[in-house]
Length: 89
Image (cartoon, rainbow, N blue to C red; front, side, top):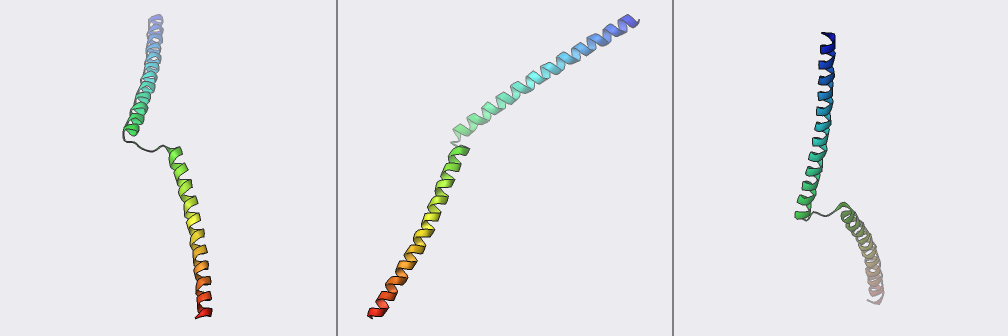
């Protein structure tokens, strides 16, 4: 009886180990499939990649800073022009 009982539990343990391995394999396959489908979906939707977004963001920030500097310079020049016109008038 003990021999049969031990063999039964050994076979059951082997079956469970094999089932766990198969489940892990299915999980890995499912994740790979979902990742590839997601990437395909994003490509078809023409979504910008993170690196491209960051590059454009940096360019926009630089352009904004340059615009602010130019606005300050323009305001200073306009003030000088008004001062010069005020002296002549």
